[in-house]
Image 1: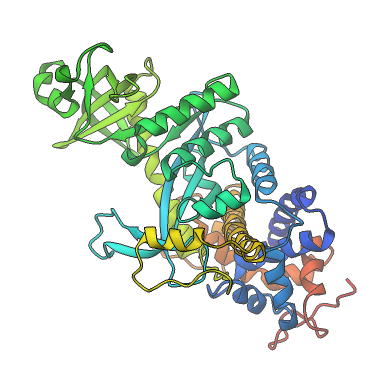
Image 2: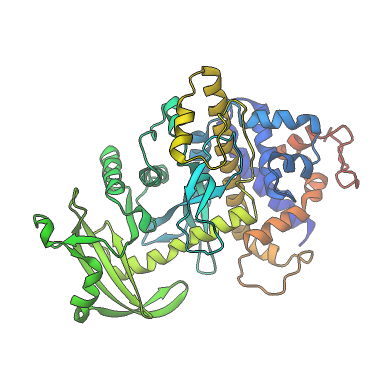
Length: 484
């Protein structure tokens, strides 16, 4: 990769970041935002804010200023999230299926041993992975991503990631519109709000955990509020779900949907569909049933038989082609690859914000007891400190989402240049589009070039201004005059 090419990449990143200027009321806060993004993008270790100071060789005396930036009132998470959606919408990389963007939503739990970190509570893990313990102490985040890319490769780009549990009292203090929502209903609402921000109807893919009565009720409320349908929800259904053929049927006439694999075996159709990137033959049955004892809402269920396994998919659109439902749901796994890269490549959860005004908990305290202790906090100064720390955690994670999205967009725009980089050898090339890991490594290798050839960029000036007077690393790598 030529020096000129890497210079173009850094200027492309700078051009995107400059669009966030309107989200900050002070120039200094925006400068710290630039520093944080570049630091998360290029850091060698994953030890929170400290790693940003180390990687960019900032003055150690600036550590407290960086901490204070995350707690600053000069920016709001909602404004940054909306601007990020606007940038993604204008990137030209959004993948559309039948003309609609594909949103993907799911929750992710991150272990945290912290005892004075807001939002931390005891969680049960439903994962089938035997290497994971049944219970953890940590944070539950809800993520909404959007599918970008094309036939060569697709990424799930994160557009929002917020804490969804263990924060009931904090949301009450903030008078948040989500204070009465559960994890399920809040993520559905955030998916609808993302569709509203994109300004068009979207597909919303979720797993079986999100097919509930409260989720469908929240979906209806959001449609009513917007005056139009915002998303078409496609999920997997649990095997023990029951339904009715007619809305007015009694409870005694309900039946298990899974039984249709036997009672309607002769009605299944066969088709060759694109399943997880491969053409596979599947047998399916499509039926519209009334589901949920309270709502009795009509749902389209698609029973799928593939290689001996049985799966039930559900869709809120009653006229959508069942083959399209099956192919669309196969994109849901993209959010799992998002979580893997977010944790392993970018360490997006590696922040350690805490406050001594947060009540301490016993190591194995139950979630209810932890929530009750936080609810007992009455002092305004304590509430303010806990709330700012909570906002700092969500802000750090949101900045990591933006960083990951920038890397993904860079991978598409400069794919050939990154793949031809001689400094980063790869044994095999799995795709013409480089991965997030490969792209991030290339940018890390090009960090000295950023200071040498791009000293006119605002993001470079923001970093140099916060370095020691020498403006260089101990190995002399960043020896650039601050007057640049």
